[in-house]
Length: 135
Image (cartoon, rainbow, N blue to C red; front, side):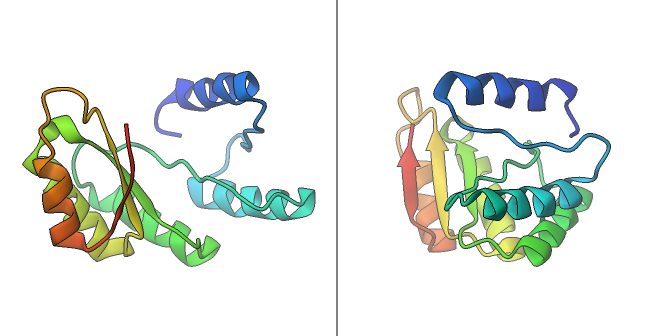
């Protein structure tokens, strides 16, 4: 909701792969996530991905929002997507997210670039959360 084109980008991608993208205009992220879970249940979907705002640094207001979403929605999994190219900053970010939310897994992007895997090893060590996908 912080970036106006974000929802539109997800909707375009969703149409390309025939996956519904849910949104409610003029609602808070917590309200949207709650409504999305209710809609998924109504439609009989067994999997839902709640894509929250990206963060380049730990922002306490946005972290509190994530905590509220977790409390309201009670997700089965909490995955953090981090850019492997940012190295040890990825580790600090993962640690902060894990302390606040209790990560169940980490997705690492851009591991095919200059990143050598140090972030992956360090994130696993610091959080205990498994690396569930590498891009």
